[in-house]
Image 1 (tube, rainbow over the protein chains, first blue to last red):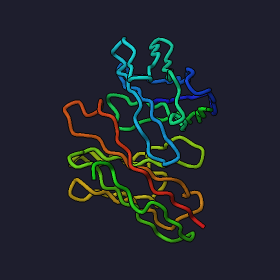
Image 2 (cartoon, chains in turn brown, red):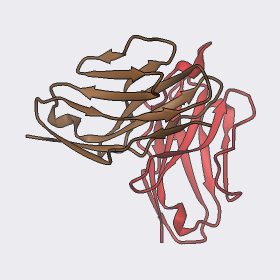
Image 3 (cartoon, chains in turn brown, purple):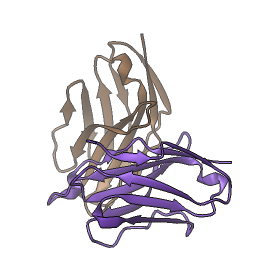
Length: 114
Length: 117
């Protein structure tokens, strides 16, 4: 079984600044995948970034990057140059290689202020 | 369409009624997932279909919940004798069929918001 924990229910940031969202997880497997999804008010879950546990290099996608600390089981998301359109609920998720399901954290509501 | 399509977008029904929620995955995606998202909560896994394999039903909360996937494409999630605690957004996702399908991200639909009066 795996668990995912997001300890920040809400965060806010000024436009153009940088913000980091925290996520910790627990799994008994050695290989797994980690994801960050964004859910705006439209409800659709949008994949932001993903990381394969066997890769040491942190994933980056434009303004989004992760800090993956495998030993600490930590997977934080950094958003640089925050934009108003980044306002959304952000979910961290984990998927074991042997499993089929995504396990989600409770989510962090991010608000970008003008 | 290019994305996962779910219908209806919203559904309001009375307690005790049966409801059917539909998911049309992305063409060619063989893996299909149903999740439930209660108000202010993360997503809770319900059921998973992969090709012709037996579905993983381990997330279904009770025997009132069932799902089927006909022809390896469209899926229907059925909730019988609905109760107020069934009120939630039901999200469907699909992912492509690749050799290492576990690595593929899931593409989500917009969900069905179910409200039980």
